[in-house]
Length: 196
Image (cartoon, rainbow, N blue to C red; front, side, top):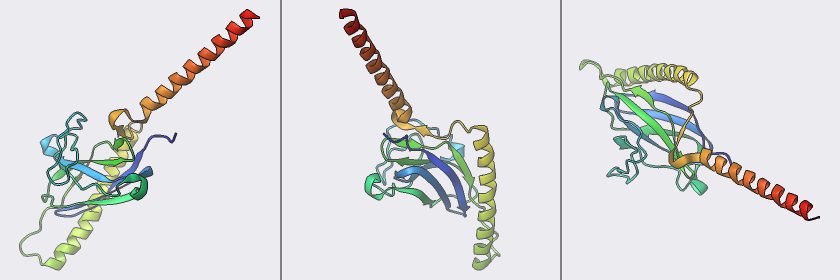
């Protein structure tokens, strides 16, 4: 049995006025989507919340929005690396997000944040805006990356949250089964030796 799915190397690659590119890796082929909301809305992970979004009919797990699920089904279309673009964001707004991938069951990353860029002055022309957006978006992405690396160092042991029990429970169940089989085998041997 393979180890549980792990989400790693989460990164806000680029941030614009109304979009953000998020990339991450998984330990094996899996699906890809991002759940997110404005940080000011105090969204929090809630596995019991079975609310789905009206566009994609996917669980929101306590968040307000989700991207469409890509690379599905995981067994034939899943990927290890992905870059997802979140669109239709508000300018100059901080968002909280979590990466969601699954082969079965779903694995959900810790919370990360990014802030979209503020719109420029009315006097700026379109080309200057695009250059400014590229430059600021890359800088903002790097700042977010440094903040997340610091956060990752502080919480290294909490690399991902697994829905519905995840691998940890299965590992314990297998260990308990092995202990039970071993104990039964030893008691059977002891009984046979006693009869002899």
